[in-house]
Image 1: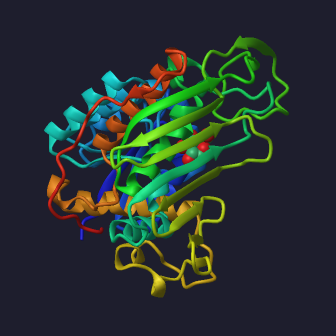
Image 2: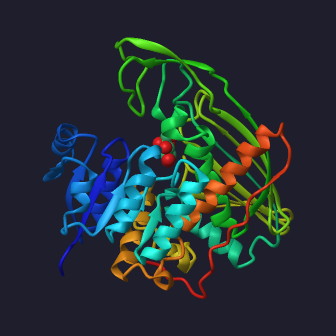
Length: 398
Ligand code: SOE
C-alpha cells in the first residue's frame, strides 16, 4: 500500500509529538517540514530526523508528495497556513485554538467544509480511553440526566515573572491567553463528554502577573527561567487566571477554573460530571482511572482495562490493565482517527465520532469569545453565539 505523505509547518515544541504520533501509525511518510526560514527548518529537520526542509510553507504546499499538512505554527499564523493548505487541496490537522479570532475560525471552518478534505483540530484530550468511556456511559444514560459539570485546567509554567511565551502577546497568541490555550481544551472536553453544549457563561478573568521579563530577542514557547540572555519588561494584558460559571443546553449548570500561574499544578485538567443517578470524575494526570460516584452504594474506580471498557472506548486502549497509557498515547489516538478519516477520503459521513474538526474549533472559539465578552461587560451572563454543525446520522470509530 502506498504511504500517505505528510508535511509539518511550524516545528516548535508540539511538532515532535505530531511526528511521533504519525511515525507510530506506520502507514504515513514524514516528507518534510517548514519553519520561519530554511535555516531553522534545516536545524529542526536534523533534530527530528526529517529528510527534507523547505524554505517556507508555500514550497511545502507545492510538493505533490504531501497530502496532509500539520499546522503547528503559533496561533496568529494558523489562518494563513491552514487556508493556503485547504486551497492547495491538502487535508489539514491544525493545532488548537483553530485561529486567533472567531471571524478567522469561522472562515477556516467554512473553507474546510467547502474544500471536501479532512479537517482536524487537536483537542487531543478526547483521545484518552477513559474519556471515551465517560462519554459512552453518559450517552447510554448511566448517569441519568446531567445536573452539574465542573472542573479545572491548572498549570504553573507561567508562575515566574521571567517566564514568557508568544501566547501572552495578543498579536501572536490572540486576545485570550489561559482560556485560549487551555480553557479551550476543557470546554471542548466538557461538551464532548456530556454531549451537551455550553449556551451561556459568566466569567471573571484576572492577570495575576501583570508585568513579565521577556527575553530581549525572540521568545520561545517555554522560555525557562534559567535563561541568562538580556530581558525587557513586558506589560501583560491577557488573563492568566479565569473562573467561569456555565449553563448547558440540557439545563445542567457548571463551572470551570483555568490558570497558568498556580504553583504545583503541571497539567492538571479535571472534569467531573454529576447526573441524577451517578457522577464521573477524570483527571488528566491520572488518566488510567475513572471515578464513579454513587449516592446509595459504594463508589468505584474503573481502572483502564480494554476488557472492561465500552466497545466505543476499547479501541483507544492499547495495553493491558496495569500498563499505564498517557498523554502521548491519547495524542496518537487522535492522529490515528485523523488518518483513518483521511484514508476514507475525509467525507463528512466517514469521520470517526471522537475526532474534533474545524467545526469544533469554530464552536470552541465562540465559547471562549463569550467568556471574554462576559468579563468585559463586568461579569454579566453572556450567551454563546449559536453554531450547530449539522449532525450525522451515524458515526464511525477509526
Ligand atoms: C501549554 O499550556 C500547553 O502545551 C498547551 O498549549 C497545550 O495545548 C496543552 O495540551 C498542554 O499545555
